[in-house]
Length: 524
Ligand code: NAD
Image (cartoon, rainbow, N blue to C red; front, side, top):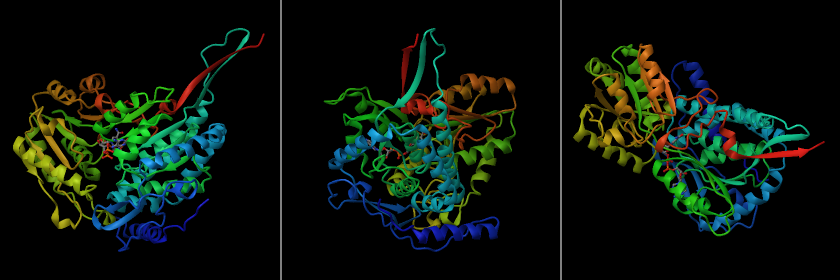
């Protein structure tokens, strides 16, 4: 097995930052380290199977807060790498699918233990590669550890499944067996937790994987692969292939031997994958399973009968945490007209307190992921200026540094059905919409093709019950923010165009990565 020395500069940076944080007590202090590109400048497969070398093309992931700084350099897998990757995954499937569930679960526990030991180093990679501040990076790694432990336990639980009844004279059993080779295609915004979650769920069930990380966050994925190897993962079980979505991604989705696709990302790409997966390729003998988790246009309803301080804080945190780049982020605040003006005053004051800058120094908000994303968000801000009233923000936060920093932006008086009210922006832009009453607010909230998260702030039990019944989202929160789902506590996944409601971190999740086999054996 190929081993590389640990990336000590960054590891030390993280450790020093942790110490600084502990001494300082309130604020993490940045180490001015110059990040060097990871030495793993190769697809893992390159060294292990007769893998065609890439044509010199590289993926470079940059620090969004300092785009002149390269965080990772990776070989770029193209269409010519699909067959070797698939062959490696198929070969590994022969033995991995027959490895005991206990052994597979132990691998996940080991990964969780290693990650817990090196949590600050992994957090540091997220701070530099995707511009999470330390609290957001902590959440991402903590969720990854939770997935390791939860899916290990869930896999063992699945072995105890049984049919409802036994026929006299028979031994009747129900087994959950692996599916085959899965394509795992994660986004960049939870580049550790979502990437690892879909991968770990796959392998603990006995599948093998071709993992194509997002081109904005391949380094953290490479670090997790190193951890899996250190924990004892056999060769070929997870085949790490950074590559472009449109070439490598498309090709693995349509490959006849791909048994399932686990995807998290945008609505557009999710629908494209759904269509491609539904088309039978020559030699394909199964219906491909798709687990697709997609975008959101998440709303928080603020009733007149509520504690406005609490509601304002919840809206502000949900809208601007990690620069609004969470699928669960609040992008619509729908507010009862009786408290609308007061809410706007309080929200403006709160949002203007957010600090923006290099997340290594733990500002409240870092940079958005890349230049293209920044331009798209700025276009939405221009649309907002036409459709509504700019309350605060409205452009780049140029004082924050050379990176892709944007001001937290709030528009008031956004009309229902307008562009800003309907489309996912995926950035620090919040639309505030005035509602006549609670029923009207619910009508506006549900008038979207998405259905991922939502929240309601109210003191009324009757309205809470109505929201539980009628607010059509996969993850509903009452009197708390609409972000921050915890694995095992809030199984996560959305309705409608937000996805297949796969509920990661929930009791049904591993069924998606297995198939049930029923055996009836005559014994007398
Ligand atoms: P994206 O759809 O642009 O990319 C997601 C992944 O798909 C990337 O790895 C990308 O390389 C790959 N890809 C792109 N084109 C492809 C193709 N033709 N074939 C195969 N793969 C392809 O999304 P993103 O910008 O990485 O992430 C942001 C989006 O993800 C937002 O819409 C957000 O709401 C969504 N998201 C959803 C959830 C959820 O649980 N519902 C969680 C996180 C993010």
